[in-house]
Length: 150
Image 1 (cartoon, rainbow, N blue to C red):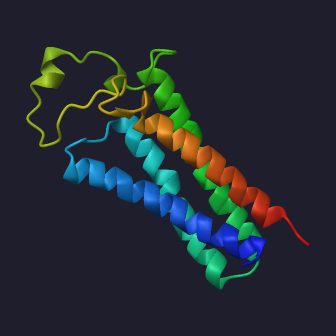
Image 2 (image 1 turned 180 degrees about the vertical axis):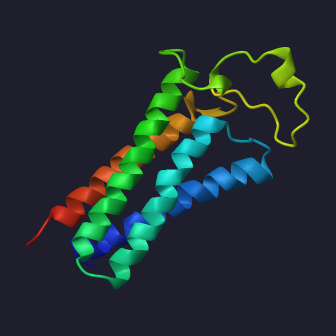
């Protein structure tokens, strides 16, 4: 398998795996996403579409690199979100602050999920932090492999 083939496979596998993990956490473990969690998912959806294009349309290197950049974008959002969770900086959404009693009494079906509280962590790293690490490293590897020519 050459570098471009590896990059295309990673460009499809990384966002698919991270989205699968997010949906398992959401529906299997009851860890519902906050607004910033959703922001991290959108670039992964785009990366899957771009990776699929890389399998069927020329120029494959460009589509693969764009998928890698989308993955990196999700990682950067995850890094910002993790910083909000760890209290390093303020969030920019309403879910990162205490909501008013009127907001809490809203009868919508979605649970109230705060962006500034990590609902789960592994080795002290939140889900947003793991997305930052995996997406940053994986997306960087994809872009590098897509750019490399023998």
